[in-house]
Image (cartoon, rainbow, N blue to C red):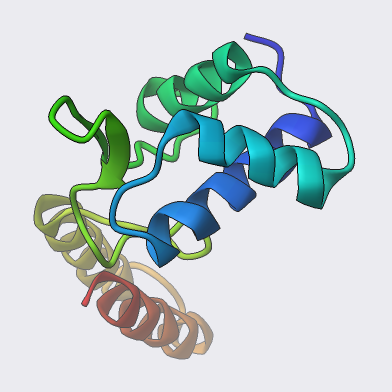
Length: 127
C-alpha cells in the first residue's frame, strides 16, 4: 500500500475523531476529511485507512479500531489510545525495561543517565 503525506494527514484526523467521539460512521469521517483537509476522499479510501491503521506493519500504529455492527460505526476499543504517543503493551514495556537494565551494566557511565531517561519515558508513555 503506497503511503503518502495525504494518508498520514487522514490517519491523524481519523485518530482525533475516534478519540473525540464514542462511535463514528465512515460517512462522518469522509465529511470531516473533505472539510478539514481540503480535498475529496471516498468511503472506500477511509475504510482502507482504518484497515491500515489497524493492521499495516509498515505504518506500525496497530490502532485498536473496532467496528460495531449494531451501530454501524467504528470506535477505539482502548479509550486512551492515540497515535500521538507511543503505545506499548505490558509485555513490550517489560522487555524494554529488562533490556535497558541489561544495557546499564554494559555501557559507560555517561550513558546511564540517558538510559534512566529512556526508562522514565517508557513508564510514562505506557501508563
